[in-house]
Length: 147
Image: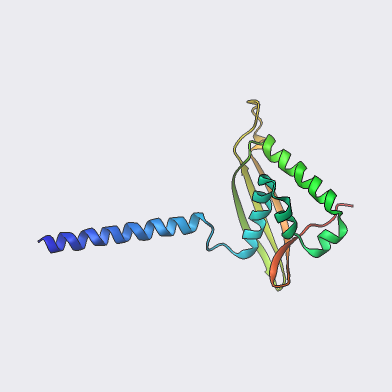
């Protein structure tokens, strides 16, 4: 009888362990496509102020069109906007198109909330579409100039 209880306990523990590991892998975006991870890193690194890391995520054409100081200033403005919105809460990234060395992703950014108790729901969520290119066997973000 004790042997059956021991086997049942081991089975329950094994199932719980599998569930916990699966959940941890899901939350860490382990199975997420590489293009989605790069897009997510754009926002998390901007929020943390790691601008040099963000610059590594950008394509060569993007970096050649825009001066590094202008890029960093734009990232600082983006970080200020994130602070105004209370910081990042979560980011959902979905690959919507991929062909060869080009990919597009939708990015839904959710913010923790807003400052100064101003009830403005426009501050809670933002959606972007990003184009990524494959350069030197890695995915990078291609930002098109607005001019």
